[in-house]
Amino acid sequence: MSDFIEDFYYGNIEPQECTTELTAKVKKSLSDLAGKEEQLTSILADKENELFVN
Image 1 (cartoon, one colour):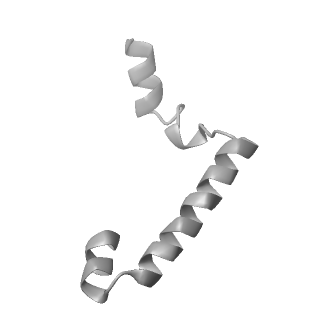
Image 2 (spheres, rainbow, N blue to C red):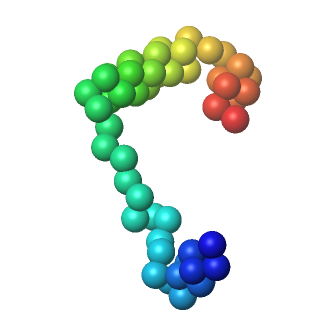
């Protein structure tokens, strides 16, 4: 365990290096979600839209 902490401290391990590739199913789900968010924000009144966004 101490090796991990030491490596992290000295910059030998960078958490940003970890990436995940999105599968086609996840990409489609994210696209669908973004579309639904746009639909919802377009029909909400200003006050409700502000609550939704924040």
